[in-house]
Length: 135
Image (cartoon, rainbow, N blue to C red):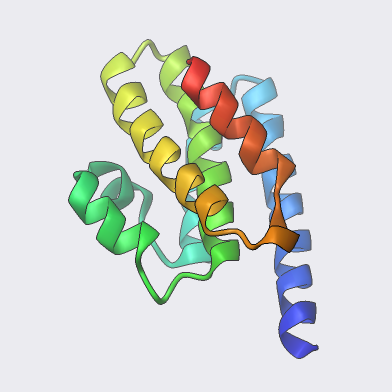
């Protein structure tokens, strides 16, 4: 029961942080947007965004996807934040970083979908995978 309460509080706090990130995105305040994403990833996963983005596919799988220290909830939070950062690269016409990050998002969302139990189907994960595949 305590773990469920902790997870619920963590998602509520993440919701507030995501609202700030989306507000910065809507206002096109990309400097604030990037700072807030960096802080959120560090806070919710203890990972550094620069390191996560620079990992090759093998390192990304080891450090993020198969990392036993990260919970499924933390992976989902990270996936959502990386997904939002894709817009940052699109707005800056940084197609190289966009493509690399898109591949990481696809790998992470695929892992989340493939490792969900029958009772854990997540419509958000499903739709984001579809969006990523169409990009």
